[in-house]
Image (cartoon, rainbow, N blue to C red):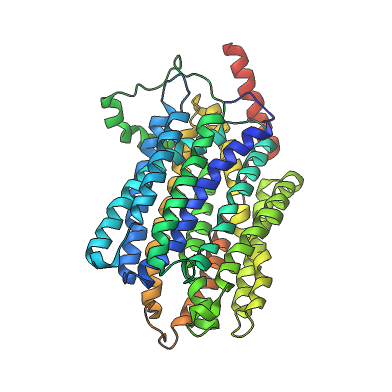
Length: 470
């Protein structure tokens, strides 16, 4: 564990630039995915499979990478080399993945995209698991951890400000002939820029040599048997009730949010503008962009201050309560002919995801201290992998559910006119599903008890133990 209480701002920014890449890839992916349906003719079933399969693969490989990262002995430490290699794989395969041509045929494009996306998500695992662990071990101070995550989330949120503008560029004939052509070019820009950003933490965040550490040997036998260690790690991690609550609450909120995230474009275009994407103009873009700006400049700073005043758990419960108000307002403020009204819901809605990861990643660091006190092991990589396994497994389920819900309500992305009730069904799920998920998450977190006082007690006990060792 780091012995540093305060972290230099430059180190926080370096970590945050990695978060920008970490969020820009999925942000761009969410925009580009519409092209698969709108321009390349993919069915909603194909949409569901392409969302689900790679992310399920990603979720399976995460714990293995966590074991490898936690037990790496090198002069560069446990994380940096993997962050660099993962960044390289992600950037290059993201570019390759989106080189799709309609003339190649639907079946070829489907399997091409599926195969290359599996490689992309393998690169994301190699990058993200050690990257997240780097953040957990940057400080042992209760509030400084929140500050680190607040800075990283503030920088990372710019991905969600920038990505919605791809809608404008992709379907402007002055820029590109079609969305298909646009994604091939934009993917190259996104891939190269994000690859460089993702390398920044590997190059500039300090780490100590681990050559003399007493870790599990990373030989062929141990890596082959790592599933046993991973299984034991899962069991031990989920014996900690506080960590279990963090994972379940994140799964419920993030899963519900991502299931309906893609519906906003279709609701705005088909409900508010009768299926005319040209008439919808900038409104789909403004929906994502303004929401992200509010999160960046208002929500994250408010959450960081709120957590210091009332504690992390209460800040979580308050922020999620505010987000429920936003989802309710969306039902009433999506009004044909008055698109500007739904902007009123965005400040409330933005407290959901904006508050979630700023607080949950900070709280996970507190849990890692508790685990070290109980077991004597420092396992940022393992806990980070398990936590993000829940996130990514939820993301996979969300992608599958998105396609299922679209089919269930009868929505046809390729039709100019939607069947009766299809858009109403999307709107019901758009407001209702996140409300249910958020309420369940708040119930799970109602008796979370790793308070600031308890966290200081754990830190003091660890400091005393380490002093005796020295």
